[in-house]
Structure formats: C-alpha cells, structure tokens
Length: 161
Image (cartoon, rainbow, N blue to C red; front, side, top):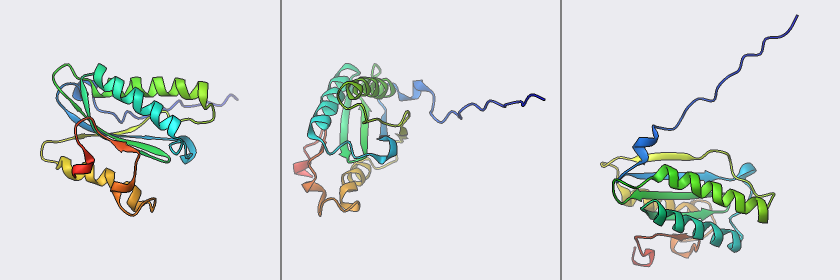
C-alpha cells in the first residue's frame, strides 16, 4: 500500500508587504547558518556595509543602526517617505550579498529568512537602538558598546551618544 505524504506549507510569519512601505520603522535580524562566525572578516563586513548603504539610497531609507555581530546582523531601517520600501531593501540586500558570498566565500551562508519587527510609534526608538548597540557587551566581546567597531548609521554619530 502506498504511503500518503502530507505536504505541510511553511507558516507565513511576515506581515503584508504593504506595511513595510512608506515612512515606517522596522528592526531586522539576519542570521548565519550554523551560527558561523562570518562577520569577523573586515572584507566581508565592508562589502555588506557597502551594499546595505547603496540599497538604502535606492529604496529611500535611512539606516538608523546596523551592527555586525560575529554570527548575525542587526538593522533598524526607516523609510523617508511614501516611496520607501524596507522589505524590498532587505530582500535585495540579501540577494546581492548572498551572490557575492557564493563567489567569494562559498562556505559562508545565511539563513534563508530573517526576523523582523515593525516598530510602533509608542516604542522608544532610542531604547531599541541602545539595546542593539549593547549586544557585544552582553556577549562579552567588549567592555563598552563604544569599543565595538562594526556598527554605524546613516543618521546618528554614535560618538555623540
């Protein structure tokens, strides 16, 4: 007797794409497969940063904070106007950096998907950014967040925080 295999579709976990468009703010986390320590190589970090900042311009978004941890990347992005597209920015960023990795570091791979969270008006954006900046301190990489060099923003000068 033939076995019947039930196909299970992956549960949708992302909100409607339209919610990521316009002057909205969202946090994203992009993780590496097997928690590999890819983001300790400055060549890789610089390439990813270059692509991220170019895509932010293309999709009319600000990068409020980016932080490369050894095995994942944190982003808080904000649309500048009704033409901004945060989700499309992240998708194209992943596509371009994934292609670059396949050519330059074939063993370095990210998880297929990513985590995201739309920030509501009542959420304290400064606390969200500070939480990300404190991540290397919580992980024991540095004593103070200011020491960690793999962070940045198109809006803030973290030397003034």
